[in-house]
Length: 599
Ligand SMILES: [Zn+2]
Image (cartoon, rainbow, N blue to C red; front, top):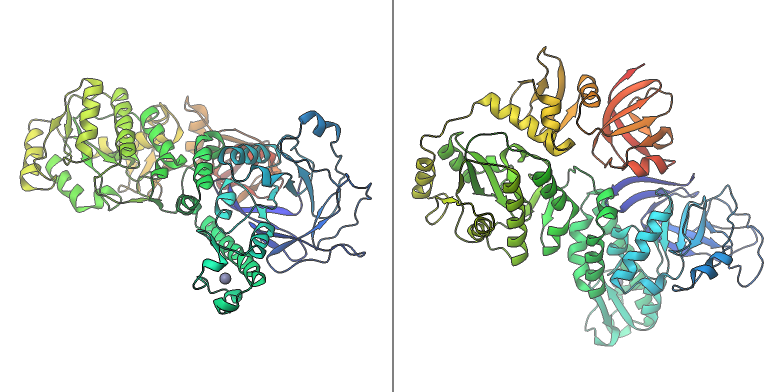
C-alpha cells in the first residue's frame, strides 16, 4: 500500500509517476543521497528525489528513523551482493515496519516482495548491469515481485547512454553516482557513449559545465557535465513516455552499446512481461525504423490476432496488394486505383512489413493505420520471412476460391512464391512491371471478370464482425453480431440489433468497437470471451479508481473494452491499467466508464 507514489502514464513497462514528497517529483528521476541531520531529512534539489538512508544493519543496530515528507527514507536494511546464496538472504531477512512517511526497502531479485513501502532499492544492481540476460532476469524478477504501484530504484548504474533502456525495462529511479565517478576519471559521457577527455578537440554539449574552453575543462567539470547529460536524457525519456513513443527511441539508443542491444533483445523474448504492459490501442504513431520493430508486442499481437482470431467472411477471390505509405491504405492513390480495378469483386488484403497482412476490414485497426515505415519493397531476410509466415498462417486459416497476387516483383513477390511453395497453392500474378501501370491494372480488372460483386451491407456487416473477432476473440463476430443493422457512414458505423437498439459504435481513430450498455449486456450473455472488472458497492461515474476494484480478469490490457460490475452498478468502459495491476494497485485510475446503470 502506497500513499506517496502514483502512476499517471504508462508506455509498456515504463511509467510517468509522481513521488509525493513535500516537493513532489515526477519520475523517472534521479535520486540523490542526502547527508543525514539530527532533524531528519532536509529535502533535495528540484526534480530530484532526496534519499535519506537509515543505514545498513550489517554495521550496527539501528533505530527506526523519524523520517518526514522531504525525502524518501530507506529503512534500516541489509543489502546482498548479487550471487549471494538464497538461504543466507533468508536468514538475514529484514522486517520492514509500517511508517507514515515516504519509505523504501532494500531488496535483491531473490528477496523482493511486498514490504509495504513506496519504493524498492535493488541491492547489487551494478552486478547485473552490463549483461543483457542478467539485467533482464533481475528487473523482471524485481518488477514482478514488488507491487505494481511502487517505484523501482536501481542505484549505481545509470549513464546518459543506458538510462533510456533502464526506464524502458521498468526502472523508475536512478542516481548519478556512476556518471559522476566516470567524470572524475576523465570519461566524458554522452547519450551515444564514452569519450576520453584527452581525446576531445571540442566539447559536444551546450550544458553549463561545457561552456568552459576545452583546454581548461577539468575532471570536476566533466563530472558535472556527465550529471547534466544524464538529467537531460531523463527529460527526453519522460517526454517519450508521455508521447507513448519510448520504444522507438530505445531501438535507436540501445544500438550504441552491445549490452544494451542484448538487453533489448532479451526483453523482447520476455513476451508475457511486455505484453501485459503494452496497450491494445495508442494515439502515437509507431516508427518502424529498425529490425527490432518486428519483435514489438504491437506488431506481434496484430499478426497473432489476424492469424488466430480473424476470419474472412467474403466468398470472393483474395486479392493481395502492396501496402502504401499513406494510411489508411484506402486513402492512397495506389489503393484507389486497385479499388477501381477490383470493384468489390475481390477481398483486398494488404501485405506489409512490419505488420504482415492487413485484411481490408482491419485497415483502421491499431496499429494498421498507425505505423510509419520506409516503403521500398526491399525487405531484409527477417522481414521477408516474417511477412511470409504471417501470410502462410493467414491462408491456412482462411479458404479462398482463388488467390490473386497484384504485387510488385521485389520483396512481395518473393514472399508470395515462398507461401505458394509451402502450401501447394497456386497464385495468379497480375503485375507486369509495377502495380499501378495501366497494363497491370488492366490485368487485375480482367482477372476478376465474371466474379460477383458484394454489396455495401455485406461489406459493413463483415467489417463489424471482423473487428469483433480481432478485438474480442475468435468467433466473437458471429456470437455478438449475427443479426444486425448498420447505420451511418463507414468508418463511423453504428451497430444496432434488429429492433434498432444500438449495441456498439466503431471508433475510426483506432478501428475498434465500443459498446453501449445494451451491447455490453449482450457481450456478457454471449459465448464471446468477456473482460470483466469487479468493483465494490458503488456506482462509478467518469472513472473507477484502483482501490474500488475487487478483482479484474488477468487478460485485461490498457485500452481494452471492459464490463465493470458490482453490487450497485453495471457499466461498460475502457481499461486504463492491465488486469493484474488493477487488482494490486492502491492508487490511480483503473478504468474509464462510458455508460453506467445503477442497480
Ligand atoms: Zn555538457
